[in-house]
Amino acid sequence: MHHLYIHVPFCQRRCSYCDFSIAVRKQIPARDFVDVILKEAGGHALNDLDTIYFGGGTPSLLPPAAIELLLRTTHPSLRSGQAHVRRTDVEVTVEANPEDVTVEHAKAWREAGINRVSLGAQSFDDNVLKWMHRSHDAAQTHRAVQALRDAGIENISLDLIFGLPEELNRDWDKDLELALALRTTHLSLYGLTVEPRTPLDRWISRGATHAPDEDRYAEEYLTAHKRLSAVGYQFYEVSNASLPGYRSRHNSAYWSGRPYVGLGPAAHSFDGRTRRWNLRAWEAYRRAVAEGRSAVESEETLTEEQRGLEAVYLGLRSSDGIAVGTGSIRAVPGWLEVRDGRLKCTPEGWLRLDSLVTHDSSTH
Ligand code: SF4
Image (cartoon, rainbow, N blue to C red; front, side):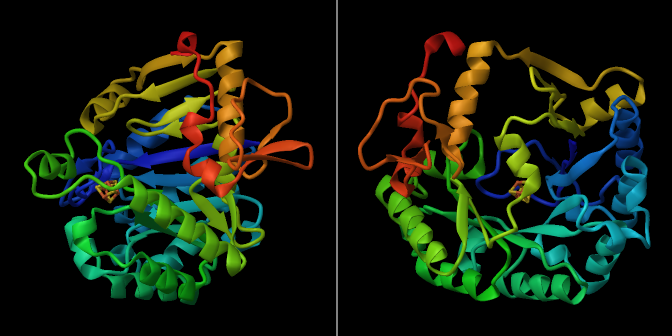
């Protein structure tokens, strides 16, 4: 089984907290993008795909016909008109910004083979969304979920960000309530982090806002854990919860150390031993592929020890935990428990995971 990631680097503007590899464009060079992705894809064996994931950036800015062409070429059995027949075989996700989701787009995505959509909702508070530089409002998130359901796409994930600076007066309980009322199959919750050279970093440096507060971060994470668990969601990874049967197969592949192929600028690939990553900037990547050069910027082959340490770290991030006796773990009462012969993090343990794993300086 193989897993394919396609990085679509375009965004219409940069969100205040974002340091991803993106190219801000008013007009998306969809034709050039499809050409170079297909050219890069030609260098990989992409048979027997289990999952395909369009991430970004903002993949929903691509015209549906471009997504359809990419899917038809990388996975011929998803060809238009037959997608519904195969929809349970291959998990095909597109990340979307709510304002891009119309019923027409959603129908075209479904026809092309998309059967899972991850919506960047982030919050249902319009003031917070403005502060984040998001280009949608809460009403558009509601409309997007409805449009996807009207088009027959039921497997929907919402991204939410918690741990925002206090002065925003963000009501996390209310946001959770509104998200839960939509009863999407999946929720991803990310704590706000301050990355260098982002607008948020600059606002903090000049005292225009405060850095996120650690206590607030912890409190909101644990609140979310309690509220989601109470209504049937299962946290299967630190930041991800789903209704039964709706875990992201694609992301689970990353977390269990399975091989994957990444196409596009900044995309990573992993063959089980070696991790390779592509040139970050869109133009540099495009030129390299168009001129027949490798898109790979660099690579790293993991030692046995690094692979072991990574397996411990990723195992502890997941609800499966790790087999007792694996790796070197510093036990912390209340944070780690043994269940079914496996060592697993409690919600408090997940919150403080980084301090649970014994780092060995030789691995860095
Ligand atoms: S839409 Fe996503 S990738 Fe684009 S700027 Fe915002 S957070 Fe970054």
